[in-house]
Image (cartoon, rainbow, N blue to C red; front, top):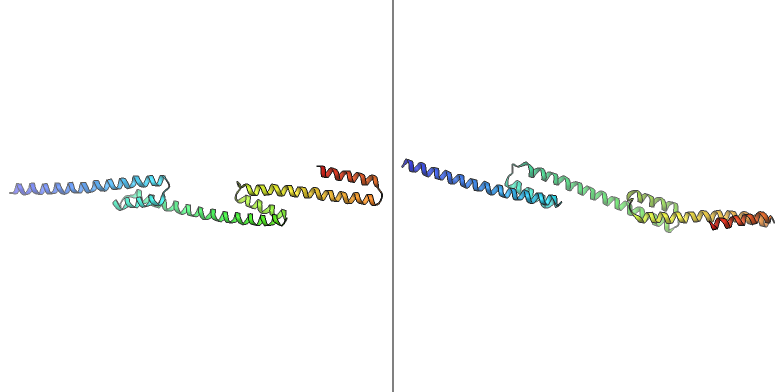
Length: 183
């Protein structure tokens, strides 16, 4: 009887140990699967889904530090992404405002202010072509305006010589004016 009782207790203890081992093996399997899935999602930058899987792993094995470290890392990463997104939105808004102002100045032929605004927009987004194209257009306009102004000044001087019958000097000034327009 005593031997039978000891044998039954040993069988019961062995069965309990086997049951606990099976539970632990299931936990280990679930934990490993959750970590593998979470790591894959993390590497694919699917941060929200990865965080959920790391939390699942924590639910299986609350004492493990790796999943909590990854959850913390994801939280920081998502915060940084959100901050970068906000900064990009602000930059985009500022750029759009500068372009709008520059276009308005351009339309009203206030070319130097327009050019300044396009340059400011380029400071925010150096790879954008639109402000570069508009600046080149403005530079051509300003260059032409400078030529036109120089031409007018020379013509006024030539006309003055002509009116005072200094024809030789008038001819020289008219030729000079032609040279300005030909350049």
